[in-house]
Every structure is written in structure tokens, then in C-alpha cells.
Amino acid sequence: MEGNEAGLPLSGVTVVSLEQAIAAPLASRHLADWGARVIKIERPGTGDFCRDYDHVMNGMSSQFVWTNRSKESLAIDIKSESGRKVLDALLPQADVFIQNLAPGAAERLGLDAASLVRKHPRIIACDVSGYGTGGPYSDKKAYDLLVQCEAGVLAVNGTEAEPAKVGLSVVDIATGMYILNGVLMALYRRERTGKGTAFQASLFDSITDWMSYPAFYTQSTGKPLPRTGARHATIAPYGPFRAGDGKTIFFGIQNDREWRSLCNIVLGDAGFADHPSYRTNPLRMQNRDDLQAHIERRFASLTGEEVLRLLDAASIANAHLNSVEAFLEHEQLHERSRVQSVGSPCGPVMSFLPALTIPGLTPRMDPVPGVGQHNQAILSELGLSEET
Image 1 (cartoon, one colour):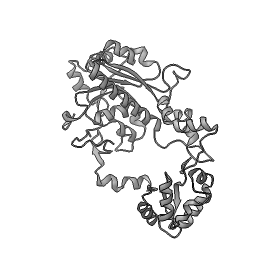
Image 2: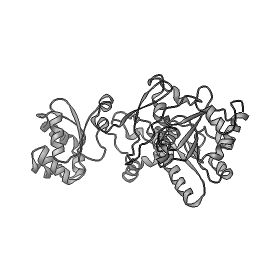
Image 3: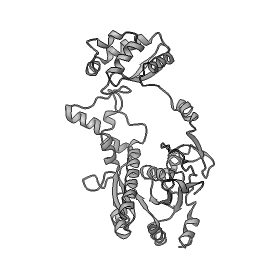
Image 4: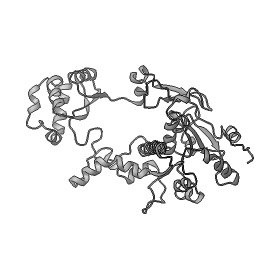
């Protein structure tokens, strides 16, 4: 560990994570950000297969760099006698154990959460799976896009003509955040009771919670939430609008006050707010295309920046339609020093600060480890050798 981690909220917490891909590594990286010592167990030689998703960051995977800074890498074969000896020496020192092995593998090795808490009553242990325990899918392998398909995410994303996946690993991210939530709750519970906790998180259950709105809408109306591309499915006007200089800007109306402000200040026609086709959101949804055309006729004499200034003056939320390149140059990132650099076996790589800001505390931004980089130090600490 580097820097002044002693003052961070999770200082003194040791996490052992038998992890790969995204969900579990993302959760443990969030713990590392705020001071936890995270020992990442990897396969000897190749390590976490996420290391080879691409090689665009100085020869390292962009997704691996994202999810693995500030960790120690311990490369052992947990199925071997020597590897299991190391793990058995490490577990009594762990506060938290996370694993996302293939279905059934942890149970066969006695590394499932319930078994570990029976053996180590103060440990917080999390099993991460694709579809949860029980049910016909419990043994099915799962990856982000496949679970997006099973949970109906593609059905609500894209255009009327064609469904689309979410461009981010949204299922993995959701799961990582629920793992993090579970660990923090269990740490608080242990502080009060002295007892550890065994819990489970799954990709399917995590995105099920995130799918509540479209699922409730469909169950209540008897019809699917429509796919509307970049426009909001149930609120109008809310989405992209073209200005006179060809730029696309976004804005959204959330209530009657904002609707009237749009008509008065941005469209220059206060009376339009009471037009019989548009005075309520359900009416605006029914007549969305005509409303879009009316707004864009007004915008035709304005540049995108002029429209955005009017929207700001009317206190209406708005946004540029940025590319990723434009996002990387975003003034909000750079004025607040949100873009940082961390070390890696391949040299410095870009990283973003953690999303939380805690006044007076600086989160860890330590290097991304190489495979097995910390074997010698960890084994020495345990009183073991490389030949164990």
C-alpha cells in the first residue's frame, strides 16, 4: 500500500478476492479505493482472463485497468496442495472473501460463503454467480450481454426497428455495486454483533432490480415499454433536438413548471403551454412527433449553443451530445482534476477518481498489479515460501 491509507474509512480491512472478469473485481476495487487491502488471487501465468480483453493501454486491457488498481496480485493454483495451503493460511487473516468462480466450483472446494462463515465465524463472504442459487438457471454460465438478453434489457434499449445492448457492462456494474453494498452492510453488522455474514449476489438478480421500471410498466399496461432510441419512453419533450447549425442538443421536461418555462423563455410563446394537444405530458406523448417538429422549427434560427443558453436561462436541464473524445476533454472533468494517472507494469495509465468525494480524504490511486507481483511479499508475511 502506498500513501496515507491509515486515515481512510476501510483502513485495516483485508479483502481476499478469488475474482475474474468485471463484477467482483469492480466491487473489490471500490473497497481498495477507500483503504481496504485487497489481495487478488489469480491463475499462475495468465492471471485473470480480463487481462487479455484488449491491449490498448500500454499493452494492458482497458477493462482490467479500470477494475484492478490498488490491489496486490497473488498467483496460486487453488486446486493444488501448495496453493490451498497458501489460501488456508490467508483466510484467517481476511475480513472479507469474494469469489465468482464457475457454478458449483466454490462448493466443491469448500470456498462457498456458507462454508467459510462456518469455519471462520467473523468473515464476510460473498458468492457471486450468474443466476443465483436454485432455479433451472443456477448452473448456467453467464456474461454481461447474455444476462442483458435474458432480463429484457435489449427489449427496452435501441430503436423501434432494432433492439440494442447497453454500451457499458451494465449488468456487471450493477452486480459490483450490490456486492459492495453487501460487504459494507456486513462490516457494519459485524461491528455491532461480532458476527460474520454469508451472502450471495448474482448478475440476474442485480439487473432485475434495475429493470423494475420497464417491468412494472409492462405488467401494469399489458404492453411493452416502447423502444424510442435516444428519446425518453414516457416523457415528452425529453431527448434530442436539432438546432439550426446542425448540432444536436438534449433537454428534458419533468413537470408543468418546466413546460411553461420552455414555452415562455425558450420558444418565446407562453400561450403554447396551454395548447390542447400538449398541455399535459400524456398529451405530449400522444403528439410527440408534431411537438418535436414544432420545437425544431423554433430552433432552426438558433445555434446549438444559443439553444443551450436559453435552456439554462429557463432552468431546464440540458446537455451536449458529446462523443467519447469530447467527454475526455470535458471541462467538468479537468477543472475538478477528476482525471488521474496510476502506475502499472507497463508504465503510467489513465484513471478516474472514485465517484465519491469525502472532504479531507484522498482515495487510493495505487498501481495496477502484474500477475503474481506480490507473491513473495504475501508468502513471506504468511511464513511460507514460493515452494510451499
